[in-house]
Image (cartoon, rainbow over all chains, first blue to last red; front, side):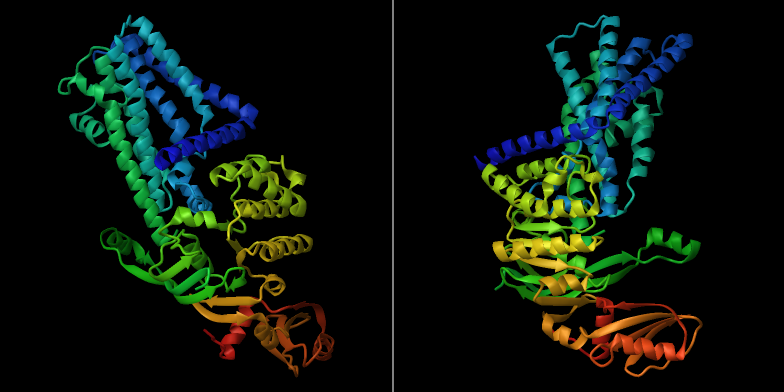
Length: 272
Length: 328
């Protein structure tokens, strides 16, 4: 009973803190809207670039334009959700550097939970706007008619994708517990891997495909689910793997969370 | 058995040794050597409930490290620490409920939100009842005049306002123990006095145990009957203020800017520092008055500017070493 009531309390606290974060962002009214519109347009821009590319080549690795749009939009969708909840983990190194991280350790709530509740990035609604529109358009253009189970796969892809990308963000932020600067790892590791996923996996050398499926499992964010949802195939990987995004997400996030907590322990032993 | 018990507490850091030059940098990729840095060594003390203790020392003495171990932020390398019957780093969340912390320059409030909202969030974080919240907010607002800036975002507050908000926030959940890290730093004279009065009231009326870290001797003199002095990780002195005051409180430092660098000899004063035209003279104000000293100096050289200082912790410690006062 105690366990459940503390979960309820935790959720209510989370909503309070998130509401506070939203109010804080809405203070900067101009920036708030420009942020959303900016992101929506930026992704739309990428989509236009794709269209221009494909105008000459008709298809890429056997993927038509609208299939590629679907692939891209699916990635942006779960990335958008991930940004809302986890993007501010990138600034963990700043908190540690400024000594403002300690406040999370003198309060009677879990430090990871507290840190996660500090920001609810509403600006990411721009990504969501674009991706929902793009997925809907692609769905219509490709004449898809998904049965319930495929909607389940879609949902699993979005949620699993959020956990996979969120987990990696959390993992990269944890580097700040060992050294001070973690932000550059985001640009060196995550951003390239993410960008790769905008295009069909079969495009890349086998070794790279292997890395992105088994080590940093971004393939489960959009490519593998897309295979299943669009009835496509891959030379060596079965499309049914695409159904496992949720499970993969949980495992990845679980591992990254543990490593973050290990980093926190290290911080408590070694100071900063 | 006090409310805070510290026994042979030690904290060591392992810092990777920096290797010289390019070859060294390459080598350090494969083989890291570590130097041990001892921040806190064999510190022991006991604080009773309701005491207000000054915890002082020069920069790098180990003050913050000790406080971090008492608040559960750092894990000690050796020794024991109990706060309110709990081991801070083992029962961090439970300990957090019985302590309040003010980190001096670093605010714990939500930066972008109106001040009052931070309090409302903390009410949720600490699960404070409506009644307790109302009561505390009324008290703090009355004494600290928080209502003057309830709606102002924390980032727009002046330092004095922010410190007032921070200390109120630290007491909102009625902790038994309060850790104050430099609570008056950067404040103007009026604000300092207001802060000190508030701290004293909290200690006397609510019986809150207060550990106060500060560089300002006036804070200590005004508030603390007991002072623990830490230097280079060790407790140098733990006792009443009157003993210190009797021995060192009478000394003053006269800083004179002479027209040109002159060797001055003065009876009753000691030249402790000299930088070009500027001389630092330490004297005992019971043996010689400032006026007399200034007269003597001006007999020997032309004074362009002067100022009078009370001794800082650093110079008191230096003096303590010179006179061999190291009391456990």
